[in-house]
Image 1: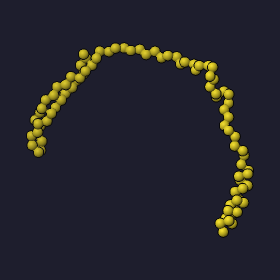
Image 2: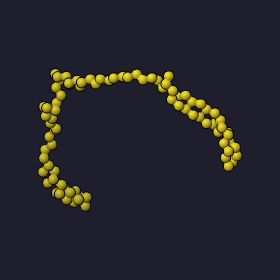
Image 3: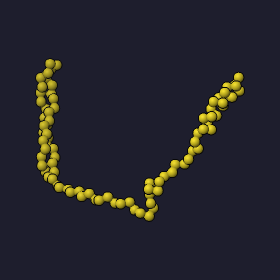
Length: 86
């Protein structure tokens, strides 16, 4: 029975295998190949301009404040910050 299945499979598959075109290696065009004698063109250098600005830093003031909540009075930290030029 197994030989019969293999024979049927061979009969149906053989025409497709023999009809397949031969495989060729990929060929690259001479344009796509990098030349070893020429160097790649260097891109134009970008100009970076640096404008120094006055330095800024944060100045903060912190304190504790009593807040009245439904569960009772709570000591709650508070903070206020702003930017200062240095």
